[in-house]
Length: 141
Image (cartoon, rainbow, N blue to C red; front, top):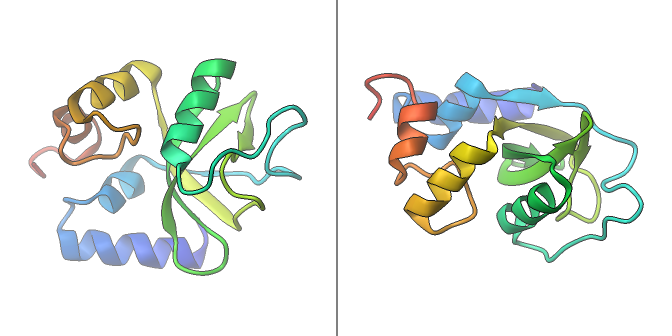
């Protein structure tokens, strides 16, 4: 994890006392190596500002792993979603790659259960009982 992402996640975690999306990502997340390009041939850039939906659709269509966490392009880390297929990061949303991706691989069954609770594509949602029980520290909720 680079200095920008680490400082951001740790600052939010401290203020939130372990009860934030950032806290969950710190606890369960991992760095993802940057590929040479945002998407392999045959995977077009998808609609901007819909990273959670875009990543979900690609994960379902290609059997890739859905990942949610934080990414940045040299500025403030943003909550973001992407996929990993055969160990390679694919960002279906951003035109150019971010400088860092740090997130949690969300198993398909857990993601679907969270979506059934929230009616949203994003998996890191404190309104979801499944998210809280799976990704927050015991007692944080």
